[in-house]
Amino acid sequence: MEPILRAAADRLIHHTAYLRYVAEQMTPGELEQTCAATGLTMRETLAHCVLWLEWVEPPARKLIAEGAETFEPLDDDAMNAAARDRLGAVAVPELLERMAAARDELIAAFAGATHARSVEPLGGDTIGETLLRWTTHLERHALDIAETLPELRYDSLLLDWTLSADYRDAGEAARQARLIADVRAYLASLPEDEDEDDEDDGDFENEAE
Image: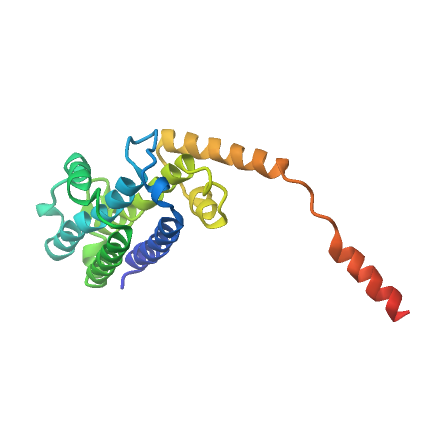
């Protein structure tokens, strides 16, 4: 696999693992909470992420097979409408199964790309760079989850996902900065842990004497 597409595959593996984890932590009530930034419920957000993976797999395969000349831009509005109409009521286990299947199909498509195809120009990027950029989509919705669900906001894995993301959109970067400030304030509010380890070490040293 071409190095840039190996990076894309690795990102898909990690981001779908993050998404599976947070999805499995959500209660039925949390799944119906609405994100203020998008207007989607958490269930619809999960469905959107799954549908996005399914949606980009055919054009990714076409790009790799036929090159840039036949490329048509993705229709995000149509995809979002389909997420509400087709997947908004699907149970989470089924969504996660579909997510894994779509991820594996994309990675299989990446494996079929030649070096020449991966460096072929497409707009201001190459095909490889375009496919790598597509794989950042899921992390954009990590912010939606952190902002919407206070019980999960400070979960270490969700924070690792949201705070390590390189958001290029100014609005998303500002939301990430607000989350960082919120996390810092939360950590500062926690009581300091008692230094039990030091006390135990002292007892051990006294006994040794």
